[in-house]
Each structure stands twice: as C-alpha cells, then as structure tokens.
Image (cartoon, rainbow, N blue to C red; front, top):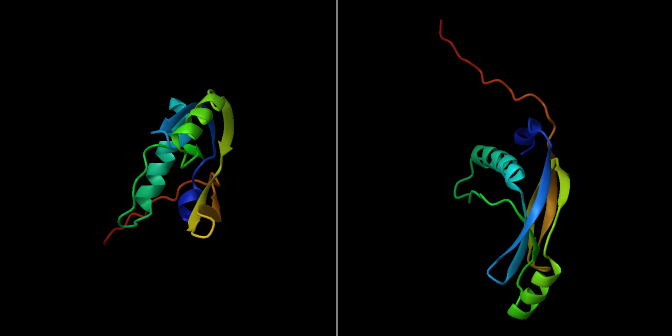
Length: 126
C-alpha cells in the first residue's frame, strides 16, 4: 500500500449528496467531479493490489448511520437533508473489523506522497 500511495496526489473532495440504502443506512456521497477523481484512485489501487477475490468498489461514500429501523430512518432523514462540505483526501486507511465493538478500526494509514510514478523498466537482449 505504501508503494501504491507513494505517487498519489491528494485531492479536494466535495461532499454534497445525502441518500440512503433502503431505510437501514444513511450515507454522504461526493459530487460528480469528486466521485470521478476518487474512482480513479480507487480503481488504480484496487487493480494493483493483486488480491484474489477482492470486491472492487465503485461507489465512494461515507456511511453516517447503519442498522436503522424504519422509525429511526424517518428521524434521520428529517435531520440530514443537505450537505455541502469539502475535505482533502490525502491518505488511505486500512481497517479491520473488531468483533467486540462491532465496528471497523483503523490499523494503518498510507499517505499520498505526490512522488513521480516509477517508470517501468524496459528490458533488452543484446
């Protein structure tokens, strides 16, 4: 991951979309320009991980409420109507599911260092 993130450049992400998956999960999503940039980074890193069975994500988002029942979903939808927020995405966090607290916890972070991508070596036989 360090090597993959070494040449990534931090980007400003504009979050301006709130929606839900069914009634159980409310999430925040980036606008189209930010989504395209995030997808570019996500695809490049995911394709270069060389991990078999890896689910390739194509929907960058931040969940803000999960496991809601219908009543809580109605309340959440009245509380979260609009968002207009920007942040600098300058790293990837590796997370592991903690069964005791039933949440993902960050176990490492990999900074985007903006270094030039290494050139592929060209081999020649003489």
